[in-house]
Image (cartoon, rainbow over all chains, first blue to last red):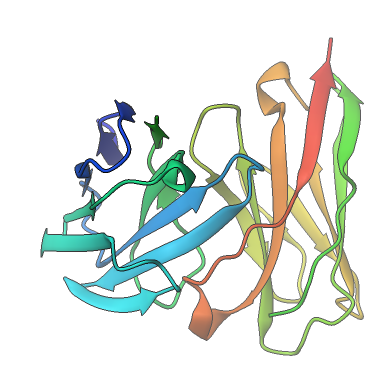
Length: 113
Length: 111
């Protein structure tokens, strides 16, 4: 069983479209995250949710809206996609908010044409 | 959080120990050293972390110098599957979820 699963794994879309990436964790963790890895391979945190509440929002355009229907799910919705949004997006989870031990998903590669 | 410096790349022969250094000379007393790795096309994987004592788990050993200004991740018997980018991250436990990944060290394990 995959601990942190993301769908879709690959997403190719046109500029201006709206798309969503879904994430689910079956580890019973309280905290979930979205990270973005750009073409230079730098990995940066975007959002962090603890028990469905937003606790970190790292200077991300408001076109990006995370949604956590329950603590096992954290979905990422992106409006009006731009070329610069092309990246690999990783979902992660941790048992507690105050821990550096994160479990990452396999990533979702988004390509905006 | 303290900044870390790692070599850009390293090679290691299969079956030998891989020693990956990390410099964190500005580390403060409440900051931990975390190591992650990212195998090609996969998500980052937690390896180990420590504060000041040396640590060992089933994946690796972490040696932290007495002054805590540097550390070494040791993979005792590297295999081809250990080829990955290894990230050394220094972070305070209270901000544990604010992991910031730098460039890391690209370890190539060769047969």
